[in-house]
Every structure is written in C-alpha cells, then in structure tokens.
Image 1 (cartoon, rainbow, N blue to C red):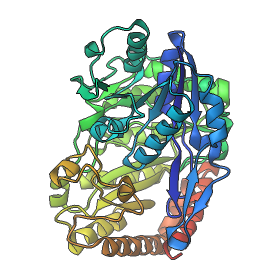
Image 2: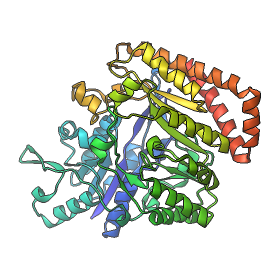
Image 3: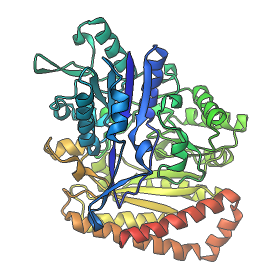
Image 4: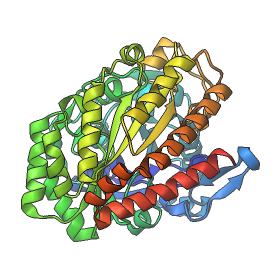
Length: 493
C-alpha cells in the first residue's frame, strides 16, 4: 500500500521566528513501513514552504504561515487510490492545521484513509476524532502501530485487536484500550531521510533554533520517555517510561549521517540523555575512540542529578560545545510543586566545571505557575545570575494537554491551541496577569544580559575565557552575542 506521511503546515508569530526541524518521528515510521514493502513518501510542509512565508496581520499581530500549495498537495494525493495519508499532530498549536489538511486530502481523493498520530493527538484524540475527515488516530508511538493498521486494512481483519486505536464504527467512536510503545529501540531502522520529498539540504539552510555552531546539523535521539513527571510537561505521562538505545547502535547512526550527508554537528534530542550515566559515558568513550571530529550538544538537556562533572573533559574532547540545564525554578517550594527537585549547588558546580572547559551553559526556567509571586519569580533571576549561566530562557508556564497542570486546572477541551503558544500565550493561571508576566520576563532578560555584559568585562572572566579559548569557543561567543542583540530588538519591537 502507498503511504504519504505529512508534517503539517504551521504558523509562526513574529516573536518566534521561522525555523525548520527534521520530522524525526515520521522518518522513523517511514523507515519501518519501507522495510515492509510499502511505497512511502514523507512530505514536510515546513521544509517546502519556509522560503516563502505568507504574512497575515500587522504589527504585533503579524504571523507567518508556512506550508505547501493546494496544487502540490493535489499532485500528491490524486494518484493515491486507496492509500494512506498519515499526519503528525505533535502540538496543540498544530491541531487546526492538521484538521485543515485532512479536509483538503479528503476533498481531493475520498478513497484515501487519513491517520493522525503524535503526542498531542494522543491526549486530544477526543477532540480530533470529531473531525469527520480523520479516519483513525493512533495513541502513542506509531512505528509498529501504523504498520499493523495497514495490514489490518489490507486484509479486512477486525480493528478491535489493535491497541491504542481510535476510529468510528457505524458512526460511533471506538477507543481501543492501550497506548503504543516501542520497547526495543535498537530494533528500529534508522530514520530514513531518503523518503523525504524535499532535499535534506533544506534543514541545513533553514536551520532549527538552538545554540548550534555548524550549518550541517541533524538530530539523533538515543532514548525515549522520562523518569520524572514535571507538572507542566507531557514527557512521562505521554511518552512513557525511559527506554534507551545501546551506545553501539547510536554510534552507527552518527557514522551513517556523517558519511551520507556530511553532517558537522549532532543535536541529541533526548529529554535527558544522561539518566543512565554509565550508558552516557560509554557513548562518549565510543565517540572518542572513533575520533569522529564532530560537534554536538545535548539539545534536550542534561539530567543534573545523575550528571558527573568528571565527564565534562570527555564531553569537550568529543565535541560538546554547549549544554542545556533545566533547573526549572529558583524557589525550593516551586520546585516541589513542579515535581523536580534540582540540586542547586550541584548545578552551580556543573556550570563552573563547564566554564573551565569552555562549554557554554544555558539555563531553562519556568515562571507563572499557580502560586507564583513576584518574589518567587525574582529568585529565578537571582539564581541565574549567581550561578553564572552564559545564557538563560525564562519560559512562562502553559497547561499543555496531557500534563498534570492541564488536568489540575481542568482546562476546557475546546481551548484554542493558539492560546498555548510558548512565546505569545494569552492566558495564565498565576496571580499575575498575562501582560504582567510578559513584562516581568522581558525585564528579567534585560537585567540578565546587562549583568553578563558587565561580568564578562571583569578581568577574571577575561582571563578564564582566554584560557579556555579555541576557534569553537570564539564562534559560539560571537553567535550568542548576535542572538542577544536579536532578542533585544524583538523585546522592544
């Protein structure tokens, strides 16, 4: 059976900027289906349309719509007689574009079956299945689940045996119990970039956001799931318990990406790549042994509790240039509410050690949770300065569907996904209003950056930077100076 997998169109606000990221989940699913003999195409609407964004609105309300033309969509769907169209719905903000795309697909060719999956689809299936153009929703991970669904459709067997499947039977919505998980990640084929309708080069030109040094960057995910259950995150609730790939399997993928696509940098997308510190150390040792000569960073973050500062030197030696440290909050009581107690002094030790080796440290904080006050918020700013992060992000909490916060606040299921945008959300459940939170976050960023400018001019800081200097560090420092200036312009535009 022929299958087309879509990463749907998206809308970016002027605060977010436009960036594209390889649809790793679809590339995994496509690789599995391709190995089963299906004819597979992966269409990333963002990679096709990012060069020609369609602007709507003016001033602060300006948005940019990224996608494919109706003519191109028709050229893909018309020949797909009796085939499958899969659409990824990872975020609440992509719900409307997912439904719009499914309607267009059905209008072009009513013989195809539309299947939707992804993190947001798993938690909002009851909302999405109301859209009549959507035939099936897969709950959980889709690699084997979509393969089994296709076989069931081809043979005419009963759908009741497929776990974690939502569909309609004689007009009635049926939800098969269970959520699909892939337990043996090493058994999966590597993501297949050759299935993309666009060139992989698009991702090097329209680079995704982050503290990256090189142009030719691709993601690698070495584990799935999480061991903690932060109140604002869907990680453990929806992605399941932590599962990992063997270090040797990870290295095989990296070497393949280097040989085939000439990549210069790896973005490890794991939520916490070092939960098993022995496995993480083994990955580093293999990278060192093979002398890969590649830059990398743990884009998904470092798990502070299990991190060992003795690994910092090996991280630097194997090409690590930056780390994300998700401290989440500077107030102990707010950390308890979040459900993630971070050893604050250990985090400062990690920052100091990374600074000695010239590894950039970026701190992530979440503000605006229920019970938040100006005083508790200020503790985040105070800690970020005293801990000596190189850069920080202050995120305002939003109740993502599937998170404990969403359930606790009893958010309406009809909530507009646009209200849940990370950088332009319109709602808050903290005592402070949304506008007050936004102003406070802007002020914190200004204070932090001004403090960093003054501290970097300190003779001790200058000596330390010079001592850890290399070409990579200089490039990273320059790029982040440019990003800071861009941030300032955005804050006051």
